[in-house]
Image 1 (cartoon, rainbow, N blue to C red):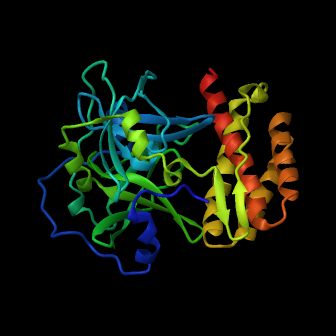
Image 2: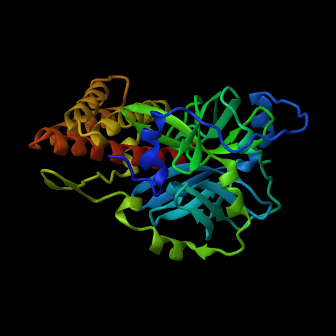
Image 3: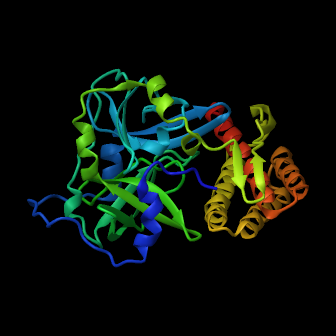
Length: 361
């Protein structure tokens, strides 16, 4: 039920979680540095963190990135930009910039460098050394959940784990959809990882790709146009399937393409409430579907839709959308089709909420 990751990392991570945590290469020593509070880090480095939008038809995907060069190069996750959509970056000052180029990608580690035509000399985040990160270290994540730009969460490095030949940072700081590709700071304000969200076994597990894996991409001199990049990354594993092959046959996805006018009269608080609840339901239900428990996935989706359909604090059009989705799901013959029918309802609502929120003052 999840968009497929373009790397082996997500495919092998669940197995690695059962193994003992292990460190990376030999630890290095660093000179004395000044620790910063989370507030200091946000105030100092927010201008170098960006919101990335990937528009594919009526669907708008949102992720996070951060500036790694004064000329406008931005680091993020590969899955944030894959899919053949129109890429746009929003800076902290509210200005928006088209993304004309992809500089480099690392498919196995889900990393990418894109580039905008910088209007001026850009601020850049300082990079740390992920080889010296240890469990118990402080970590601060800054990202862009769809309606909540520049959200800050803090936590600890829970573990440094080995995944095949690579190392992955497991963190306790929450990473929500829309925050993938954002920077993970240590207590000194240095970026030690790139945030990514991996869901397995019905739980949200938050991870960071060590920043040292990004360094080879920073040295890349060439680039390719978005059109060229899209030709290589438009397979169904990247753009999200329009049809789903199941044991019961092929399911045609029918994501509603709502007009923004459907949300006239709905305020931002109501839309944010729905967005958060629906995202949470997907985060809980999708792993169950992936594990083969389609009935449990559908039940979670149905419970969420029922809750919002009966919530009188929501505008009528939002409640009606959930009601229509449940009626459609009930016409399906099995739990697999029912789950996808509800997921179509959810994805259609998430898309129109994002588009409507952007047009509101």
